[in-house]
Image (cartoon, rainbow, N blue to C red):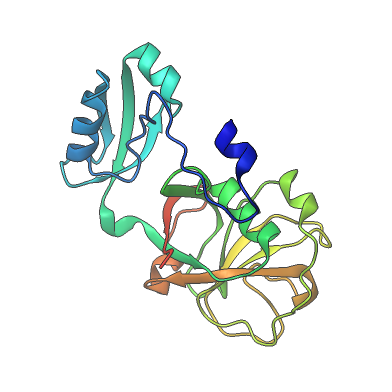
Length: 213
């Protein structure tokens, strides 16, 4: 506490937990199993169980629960199936909402549930969180043109606030969720083949990673 009391605004303080966090999400099945074994935790592989598959989910996630149970279930997916996105907005509320909804706030692989995806659609949309999105105040800088690959969220001024979308066609009128500029908070960009987003199954789960470079 003495160090904290002497810290000035802007200082960084390293915090080390004991026990360390026992979360293998983002690792390969092989590396994750070896990592968790150091804690005495057994692993039950599901999904893509090959050594090179990426662990996209772990249950339980919480370290104390995993240690108490002594076993976790991990869900693997092919590395190439994970969608890559980049957050570019300076709007802290919008980026915070997105990371909380997807789980990227506390782990390297997040997930979204598909609301609508179809060939020829101008956008692909994902469910958000109705309660959390009530605090999404409209952004000051409205988009002049929404481009293919742009990611946006419907803000609190619209009935479907919280909806997350990726634009598949350019538009000067509508954003990634189909709302006009006043109802859209821009988030960032999708990095990858946009055609993949036209063939997702409605109500299915997709896994995402954030490019922080």
